[in-house]
Image (cartoon, rainbow, N blue to C red):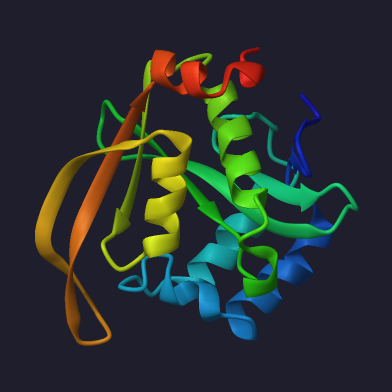
Length: 180
């Protein structure tokens, strides 16, 4: 699949042209680090990982870039293994002005609809201080299944680590138009 569209967004594979955005998002426009695993410090590895995926065998399963329909690149969606048996999804829209417009919901639900071709349950994880991601997870239909108290320390304050899940049938009952 070359790309997929849902609402005002398009999911597509990474290109060389995206690297300027990734450099800017990891050096200048870095506010998103306050929300996306702020306890990690792997900015250099992140850009290198993105560069390495350019031209790799494209598949829908691991990560895709998010464009709005005008063609502007605004972020990415990913999967990651929580453990040997559970696949989690994530989303990043780095610029504050691109958030709160439904792009994240459109991107993540489209991505998940394709992942459910292989998965029966999907997960997402965040921390208790990331209210926007918690609201998005709940809006999509995720349910909190695990809370580890005070696991994350961010800017001197302790926060719970949260894990959410949604089953394939629950997802498609909430988002029937995304069934492939």
